[in-house]
Length: 237
Length: 252
Image (cartoon, rainbow over all chains, first blue to last red):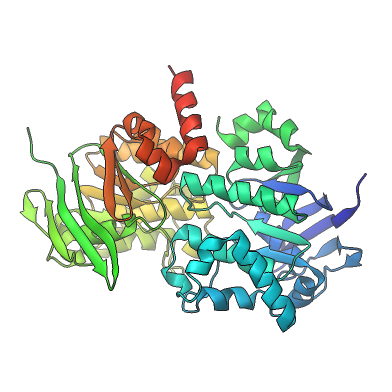
């Protein structure tokens, strides 16, 4: 078995004393793409918030790159190399594309920032054209590029993408999945939360289906893509 | 031939140096579902704002039920029977589901009990009957989308503009909400919808317009526009176009 970059053990978490996550365990191996699928409201975003330190778990362990991080500060988790690109992009609309990207590297030095910025602009040449434009005036697809680019500015080892294809035209959805594949080939480990199930399964090395805060089905992307039970209850096919 | 319910002719909207909608025209016949698709940033939401009155057009005409409405404010257009939903749903989070829907009902009902009764009836149509007294803040994404439909429906629209109501829903949630939308048409409501979920566009729409960079580049039945090379190039991409074609073939 390959080395796990992220390991989650028996994670229980929620809000105000109630639990949303029922005791989740999962591994993300270095260099892989792992997909977490499930309906709205089952706890996927809560899981992401625990991993990035925004929500403290009630029980369980999160081990990232050999360190326990379930009680760590969000900014220390970013510095350790776990970066979360939130659902809905959450850009600063009145700041420029450049400023939004720079904010992603707030834990890095100036020289590193310039180098990473070059890499991001190579991946997203479109953002170079929009560099000094206000982020709020960009189209949906361009805003998603800024959000992912901002995540890359933190020089992550693990990038968590929460619904990166949300609200994008079919062509851009395809480009987004191709991009995720390329980032992964370049060495980035990715945890992908998506509603676009079939395309996620095509890309993912491993996938988990979440229901009522528990992982109810796990397998390789190809296994889940061929699972009739999943297709019927979850994919609506 | 009867006059269309809505007719947008040569409408343009300029924001500073940007021509967001550029000489676009479309017609919506009464009693069906018309789709409006196109790349992100094509001007679809701006066109909705011109129709619903949130933005005045720079030029062009908008005729609803044979009357020019392009200079009327949004509330007057709502009284005439035009309602819209928003891409980012923003319910009144301090109010219950019932109260949120009643806000729309007050357009035509002036008594509180009447508005509340109407809200309860509409909740049934969108599948929120068992959440009537729940605070809107606690709803899931999918329930929020249903609430957004209900709030628009409460204004008794004749023309309902739906702006990406299916975005963020998973395939089975999309499957569950499609009959809800189709039932509106059975109740005599005409729909114009902006949507990227092609599964829904193919199954719901009678006619589709394609907007790209502010201009209409194609129109026709869903099957016709999804075969159009210009539409594949600007919007669908080769992969999605192939998937749609193969799904159409497998359904005969």
